[in-house]
Length: 161
Image (cartoon, rainbow, N blue to C red):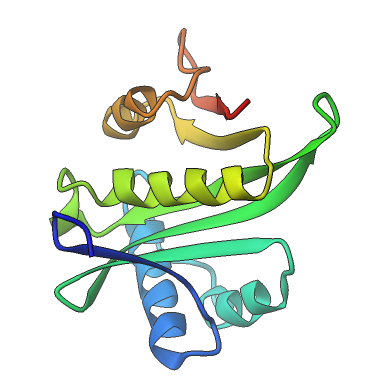
């Protein structure tokens, strides 16, 4: 448990409460204007957890506050041919609207970075919408680069070497 009352844990999709938390948080994120701006397509919400469970490169963490899931980081291991080392890509970073600005995203990304370092990764990568200023601010503060200039989407990197 962190000072902020957050608990960050690696997801076990075999645990029904973890599977439901991931499903619920991804659904909320998809509906948010900074996510997909609408509900996931028919069948996707039911298929996402089994598909993630079958994906060997998936790395997922949940953030809990007072026993309730408040954020998720869905990541995938990849490989940098330019560095000849593994990397971690943050595919989804979702925080419940009521929890934004309370350190959830930061805590999740710090856990992702710690895991990436333990795996010998050369970097953590992510994408962010050009109009998502709140997320961009967080990423800059955590050392991500690639957020310069006008763009509809930024491809960001945090070197770990």
